[in-house]
Length: 166
Image 1 (tube, rainbow, N blue to C red):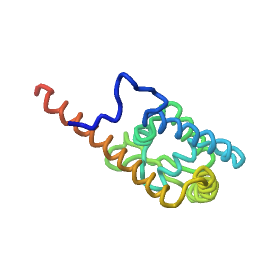
Image 2 (cartoon, one colour; image 1 turned 120 degrees about the vertical axis):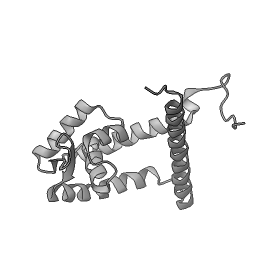
Image 3 (tube, rainbow, N blue to C red; image 1 turned 135 degrees about the horizontal axis):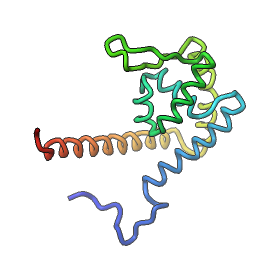
C-alpha cells in the first residue's frame, strides 16, 4: 500500500508539494525576469536559449512540452530571438515539415553572458541553505520528478493496453 502523506480531510493546497513547487517556479520566474530586463531579455527567452544550449529541447514542440508554454506565445519568443540573430530555424533534412532551432554564435554568447545573472539569483535565493541542504533539495526534486515521470509512463502504458486495437 502507498504511504499516505496527504489525507483528503486535512488537505490544504498551500501545504501541497505541487503548490510549493509551482510557487517556487513562479517566484523564480519573476526574479529572473526583473534581472534579465536590465540586459534586454525575458525569462522565457533565457529558457529557450538554455534548452537549446543544453540539448533539453531542440524544436518548438519539445520546448512547449518541456516548459508547458503556449505554442503561440513561444512562436513570438522564437521570432524575437531570430530577429536579434540569436537563433535560427533549420528545416529537417529527412522531413522538411520539421523545424529545429539552433543558437547562433551571438546566441551562444548571449546565453553564456546571462549565466552569471542566473547563478547570482540562485545563490541569493539559496543563501540560507547549507551546501548539504542544497544537495539534498536537488536530490529530492530529482526523486520527485523521476517518480512523476514514471507515473506518467505507467498511465500511458495502461492506456495503450486498454485501448482497443483497430
